Each structure stands twice: as structure tokens, then as C-alpha cells.
Length: 422
Image (cartoon, rainbow, N blue to C red; front, top):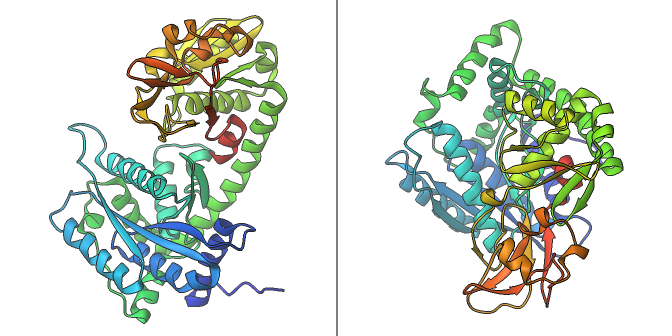
């Protein structure tokens, strides 16, 4: 029997990272590729160093990426520092640069989303299916306090997830059970330098204010790991609720050509929280949004559907048809053309013969007219926003509308997996 190392110290750090590496490897003994996001700060530098120690015995081929956000003059130098560190470890390293924030909006949120998108695109281009992030118990506790200030429910208070799947990437946070200072002690012992971002002391940002609030709570005996443990307990409770939504969807939701339908009677009889969470999942899965809709908008949608009315929310059209509530992509919200090989409209992977000039875009009404048997494959509303293969305005294939040729289209992920992963 393998004994779990006591909390704290290098043994525990290695144990936690090894557990995540094992999940990434699965049951195959073959070498596998993982990505590590490294900013140059203490958390991510410790994660990379730990992964590098374990890579030979786990079969992991390690790749590192740094996002140069350009918000500070020192960011380019920090990216070069990470590159030199990776070279010393024999790890391939890449830098991706953010073009900067929009004139309005939440700067920290924009930077966070940009980092995630750039990392995901880098991983997809490299064929990397698992990416490791260096968030700690301190990040978990700070997130809890921020969500508490926003009066969040269980989803917000459950905090950061240890792992999840998004845009076909399996994300891991192996160090959520470890404190920030423990990682710096590890780096000191290993003789590894790191960079402290001065924005981490800027009260302009909510996370910095939450970090300072944690210090004030310490005299009360309330520390980051205590709050992180509470968030973990809430996450377990949340998972039970998510499982209930998933089970209801298996029994009541029909999926076809990327659209969903379910009985309005069954929906009306479902518990209030289940209805709410189901529609959030429907809207995010079809619409591709990173966050749930506003509560007021969601309440109006639920009220409308219970009253038998059609509605639109966040790029998703809800219609009452043939005794069902049908949800499909709103045509004007569908993504424009993308090159073959890229994920289209947030969830479609189209594969087939690689030829120059091919793009993936919505089938549309004109494309549907070129598919004589489309009625055998789904509703018009679903099929006109299904992925099709085009070449200079000529329809080459419509995999979901009865004109597949040598092409197929797959959802990444399907609706049931999306519920469980989000």
C-alpha cells in the first residue's frame, strides 16, 4: 500500500504533482506530452521544476509556455529568464504574446482569459492534450473571499477546480493543496530564482485586496489552507448537484446535429435549481460563453419557457416546437470561417482530406438547399448552423446534413461531458 506523504515538504509536493501526471498518462505506458504554463513567478517555477524531476520516471515529455502580457516593461525579460531556465532543464519553451486589453472592461479578467486562450491555442498546435497550471491553496482562498464579496452561490464558493476539460484540453492544478510559501521554500532549497510581480501589491485589483484580507484573518486562526479546505468541501457538494443535472439530462434531453430538445412538462416538474443549471449548461455549451448568463436574464428565460414562449439568450435560440423545447445556435451568432483543423464555433472538430483553401463555416440556408436528404438528419434550425466544408464559396461537404463525402464532424465535448466538466 502506498502511503500518502504528510502535508508540507518536498515529498508532498512531488506526490501531488505525480498524482496529476499519472492522471494525464492514463493506463498507457507510452510516453505522453504535457504543457506547463510558466510566468516566472514562484508558483509556476516550482511547478515546472517539480514536473521536470518526475518526467523521466513517468514518461512525460514536458513543454513549457510563457504568456508575455506586455503590461509591464519587465515582462519580456521575465519570459527570457524562463526560457533560460527551461534550456537548463532540457525543456522546450515557447513564448506567446498578448496584444493588450480592450479600452474598457476588467483588466485582470481580460488578461486571465487571454492567457487561457493563448495557452490553449499553443497546446492544440503542439498536439498537447494536458496543461498544468501552478495555482495554490492561497489562490483558492483568495478566490473564495472574492466570490464571497460578490455574494456567490456554491459554484463561486467552490473555488478553483483541480482539473477540468475545456476546448479539448485537460487542465490540471496539482498544487491547489499547497501553500504559496511552501513552494518558495522548495525553490530556495533547490537554488531556483523566481520573479515577484509588483502588481501583486496593487490595491487596484480585487485579488490583491483579498490577499491582504487573508493576512488580517490570520490572528483569528483563519488561514489560507483552512479556507481552501472549506472550498474543497463545497466543491464536493457541488459535484453532487452537477451529477444530478447530468443524470436528468441523460433521461430527458435529446441531442442531434448539435441541438438539444427536452419536454416542457418534464422541465416544469424538475427542481428549481436543476432547471437553472440545465439552462446554464445549454447556453454555455451551444453559445460557447466562458461564464453563465446574468441571473436576471436567466430568470426571464426560465419564466418565458415555462409560459410557452420562444426566447434567445447568449447566442442560443430556444423554441417551443412539436411538444418540445428546442435549443439551437442562433445563426447570426455562429462563428465565421476558420481554417481546416481548427475548432469551429467553440465545439466542432471537422476532419477529412487536407486540401489547399478549405475552410469550415456554417452550412447556412444556401448550403442546406444543396443537401437533398437533409430532412432525414435533423431540423432546419440545427442544420443551417452545423459545420460544413467550403472552398472558395463552393460547398464541399456537409457532414451532418447527409452530404458527408469523406468528412466527419464531432462535438468536443458532447453535452453530457460538458455538464460534468463545467
